[in-house]
Length: 214
Image (cartoon, rainbow, N blue to C red; front, side, top):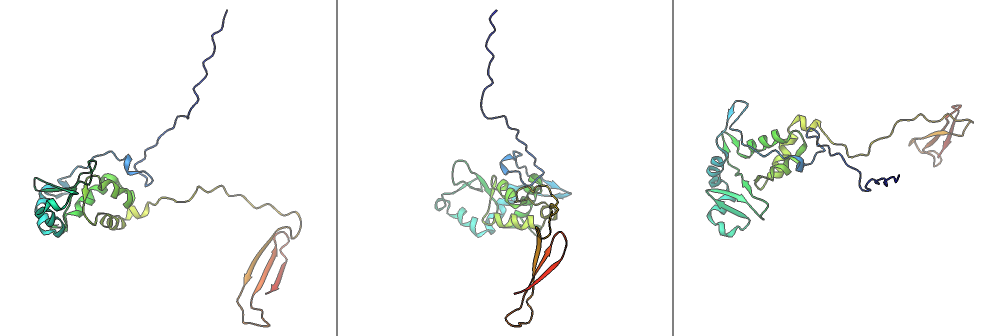
């Protein structure tokens, strides 16, 4: 009886498990696939149509007013249907938000607020990356940073930029006197014969102290 040869397992990279946790600030903005949706009512506050806010606000924004008057001079912007889109290439088409006001607030503030609600408390960098998918205005980055800095929850959630720390271990007990020491410097003292410091040396096992003037 002939035993068929055993199939060797394929050699390659081991399978990896991708964890996408949208509740921690270490997630990247590319993992956020939720599209932006303008909410007409947020916590009892009714908001008009975003496109209408933009059309009405362009005339009071000096940057976007120039683009509306001379669109041929601004190749990175596209004007269509009274709306301005920032489109430097074929992959980006972001709605331009004017620095106009509605009910005493800048139009950019409710936009940032809704982006923040979608992204969560993930800090200004990820919030900005998500916002730039759909929106553009000259001070977008600084406005989002100021908004996140005013959010107490965002301030409490911070990512660690240090390597994981190891476990704590007790120091070994010395076997002989002066095989392990502790030391410190005390001073400066008023100068006396060119000496103004004391070097304190302590035996870790028996605790006698040596004071050495420096």
